[in-house]
Length: 84
Image (cartoon, rainbow, N blue to C red; front, side):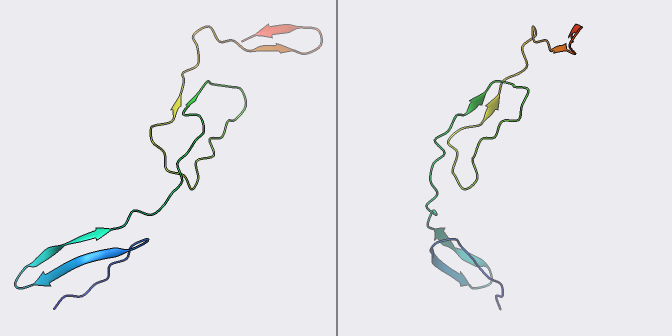
């Protein structure tokens, strides 16, 4: 007796047979997902950056560059400049 369920997004086709062991082949159609067309590399910034990738297929990794070694923050309170 074989019990269970198979689910697929899109179509699922193939055959399974059980005769002492489960054997067969299944294939699932690839769902149509649009490709991400935005940038894949980002420079660090003081403000948040969002890559709007939700619902898209990515063709490569998204890379966030490291903070440069000469990066410094400057603050001015109206009378004193401070470099961090």
